[in-house]
Length: 86
Image: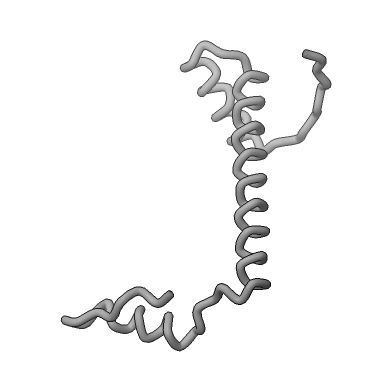
């Protein structure tokens, strides 16, 4: 696999944590950064997918009005909570 060097300035405390983690795991700094970057990108891609899915639901009218959600939330502290709005 081809690679490309990326350079980033990070705060010293973060760099120290990367160094400590690399030493503890007996891995290189680059390996730690690659793992972290991969996990973050995966998380952001999933967040975007879920956002687009939610927006499609809104476009289809699959929404719950605010008053129903508020009534449900308010009932959670009561002896007889109402059903989850749909």
